[in-house]
Structures are given as C-alpha cells and as structure tokens.
Image (cartoon, rainbow, N blue to C red; front, side, top):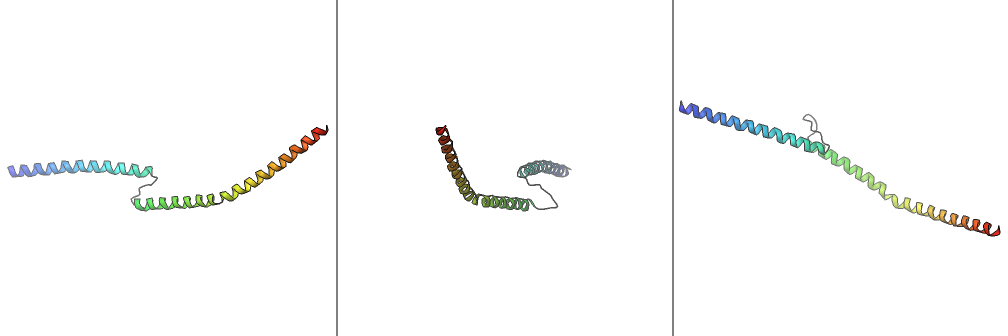
Amino acid sequence: MVTNRKTRDGVEANLAKLRNNRAKLTRDISAFEDNVATLGVAIDAMGMTTKQQLQERENRLLREVADLARGVQGLPDDLQIARAIVADRKVLMESNVADVAAKEATV
C-alpha cells in the first residue's frame, strides 16, 4: 500500500513537472514566434523552415543592396553632368547680366 502510494505520488509529481515544462515551452515558443515575426519571418509548419525563410530574406536584402550599389555607381557621372550644366547656366546668366548692364548704361 505504502509503495503504491509513493509510486502514485511520484507519478503525480512527474506529471506536475511535465505540465509546468509544457507551459514554459509554450511560452518560449510563443516568444520565439513573436521575435521571428518582428524580423518579418512567418513560421509555417508545412512550408519553409525558419532557417530557409531567414536565408531567403537575407538573399532578398543582398539583392536590394546590390541594386542600390549599382545606382550609386552612376551618381558621380550624373553629378559631373549636373555641374557642367550649372556652370553653363552661370556663364549664360553672367552674359545676360552684362547685356542688361550695357543696355542700362546706354539708356
């Protein structure tokens, strides 16, 4: 009788521990899912693994960075063209100012 009671008590204690562990694991999984969601990764049990989703996101970001880098490479040429246009406009404006000053002097 005493042995059965001790065994039953032991089993009930183990069940209580398992229930507590299950609750903790559920909380941990929920926290993990929340953290992963903030990274923009959706957990799908039937689809890609989290590692695959993170790899896909990294690949997308790397492609975006490469596209931006290509765009930046053309900026020095565009800047040089813009500077040339501004310089031409400055010369034209100075010429117009000189013309106006000459006309005003004759008036």
